[in-house]
Image (cartoon, rainbow, N blue to C red):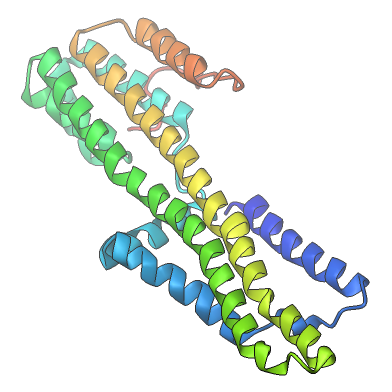
Length: 267
């Protein structure tokens, strides 16, 4: 679980409430059900018009990845590829057929199956590359949905504020009621800006970062599978994959499992 994201959201809400209370304002004034209905209801309805309900639901499900770390380690996958390379070098490419059921990563499993079925590195590369491009475009829609939500929310916050101001114009001759009504009206704006910049847009950004990691992992698998198909040395494959990871993640240090071949993740 990604506790940092959860703590950050809770901390932001806490700081907003504390700062509001520190100025002597009532906490109750920040909780307006009608404002929530206008902002969230309008935002999600607009998203359904832009996208379709199934796309919106898929994006919401994908947003759970922001709070739960479900991605396999890059190094673990590299270790598995190196082990597969050792097995293919010692026992032949078709011996990998006995290991397919033990492979956890679905894209790696797909690549191994293709390498067994087709003795053509270029064909395997083209197939896997096309699948990577398709998956990237499909998952990119999720971040676009939340970017759209982040754009709609502030607008509906303003709509809620305008509605509130229209309603209180009847009290123009009563300054006390008018001032209180204006404060309530602008809670909608607070909700719109808050949901956009604290929830929707950060989730969109995180989904893009997660997608980048997923695509990097699939690119590593692609390079590894093609290298195995071309009967390259496991040591060469290891250096190639680590260099690929370091190039795309310069702030990370990668080191594979240095155990004896045969003790990697697949058995």
